[in-house]
Length: 246
Image (tube, rainbow, N blue to C red; front, side, top):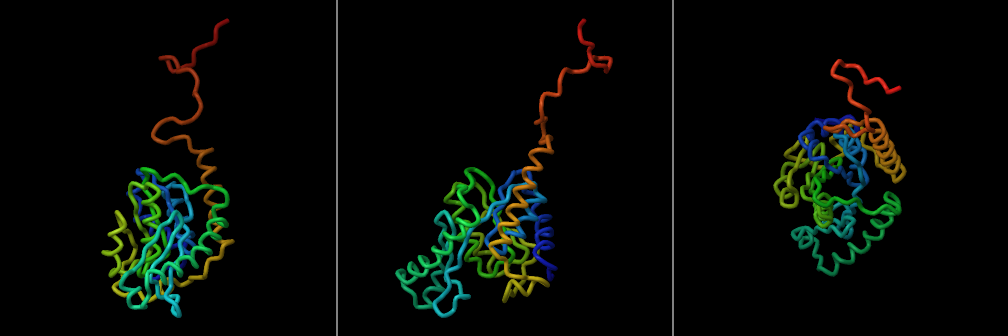
């Protein structure tokens, strides 16, 4: 199917992830395009939203051809077959990764500021992107989450290339998609509107998520047990409050 935009895609994806609600997951949007999709997932699951900063390592002269990817928290994944085809040595790949690390660090500062990477120890993490062809950035993000102590890592995207799914499961505990096409030439072809996402738009989405989270904390007291203030004395057996003494 073709999605109208990232918002609609995120809403449809969230319905596929409903079974993870009870795990109280942390939702990460892979930057940049995955953040608007992840916002809808986090909103519908009542989960916090965080950015996961990733950068593709492109082949020299053909940057769209991913030979690997890096993520914050030291997540790295390299495709050995792609690097051999490109004739790259380990030193070449390290140099390319170091170049991408400069922009990755800038984006971490821009999106996260002084806040530390969230504590995911023992938690379920849902990594969300707007679409996955080869899965290089997704696998680097998964390794970053694993290094940070996540107990379970789920990859979710509106569209994932069917040929990539088995490989993705090597680094992920679960993979969820709305559509798994046999051929996926470009993720943008699966959207009617697929504009490039700017830093400002990422920050705007993260602010919306933060504000929504504060509203939930202030307004929703029920979480399987009473979490609000002391409701006062129990009513009498006759259903009336006890009268105060003279």
